[in-house]
Image (cartoon, rainbow, N blue to C red; front, top):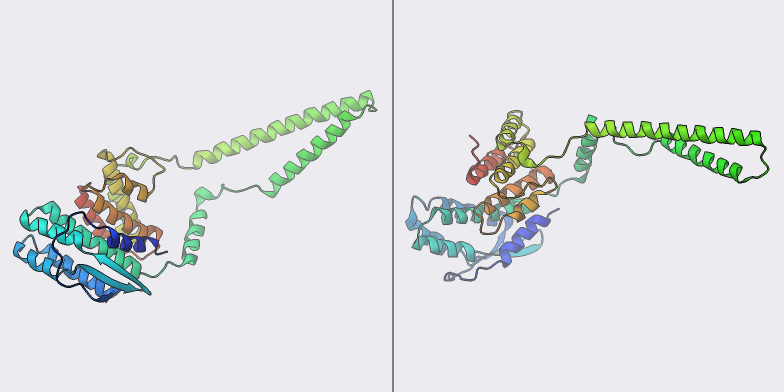
Amino acid sequence: MRLFPVMGLLLAMWITPGTLPAQPAETAGLLTLQQYIQVLDNALSAAQKLKESPEKAEELQRNLASAWHVEANGRSFEISTDTIRRDLEAWQKKPDDALLEGIRQHLETLRYEAVRYEAPTANVSSRRALLSNILSRSEFRNVRGQTWMDQLKEKFTRLLVRLLGRALSSSAIPVVSNIVVYCLIAFAVLALAYWMYRSLRQSTRLETIMPTPLSVSAKAWPLWISEARAAADRGEWRHAVHFAYWGGISFLEAQGAWRPDIARTPREYLQLLSATSAHQPVLRVLTMRLESVWYGMQRADAEAFQQTLAELERLGCPCN
């Protein structure tokens, strides 16, 4: 599904700051998705050189169109550059590393959304194969529904209760027959108690082999990073990105960014950070990469893993 990339492009299109710098003289013409990505690469490259060459900020601002008009897959988008140009103007008045980093993060986010939108839709059959592979693991072998033996026991119990009910309601049964009926009742009660005892023991045994849910920070972030590097050494890049992401979550949780909660999703972790948080742009990029690689079944490689480690360093999480 391409819901998140579309939402990202729409957000970039509609969110406009309250105070805008002067508008450029011209706007960009209609761009293909590849041309748009190239424009973002050029702007990102120029922004990364501003710290060494501050005099080029005015040139970068002048080259930015007021908006980029993009056409992809039969749809058209307009992505405003007001935020970037406003931050550039503020940076020229007062050079600040955090402001420059925000410009770079904004451009990286736009590029990441564009690349995700360009990527083909994941094959559903591959997801089913992955799910089947997970359910075939040893920890899931005893997780099952009602078997034919369980159904047979249930039918037998219902039949026995129905027969005993008819026998007890008849007033023509001799005394000897009453004794037999009471013995059958006692046997049925004992059999039912034994069956319930066996079922409870089996359920308890099943529960003991299932992992106990723990918060992310219960495993220290250095252990997550260590597992990520071990997966990378084996060439398992999807697992490496996955473990590295949770290392970042464990790091933020250990810093007191939020209260631990085992039921929280990656998107919910992102929503816990305010829009003014310095960690919010970095965590947004980490979350989108995790969704793309781990849940979206897109291909991961060494570059994606190294980018993830770089983002963790920007969070303040040492990875070396």
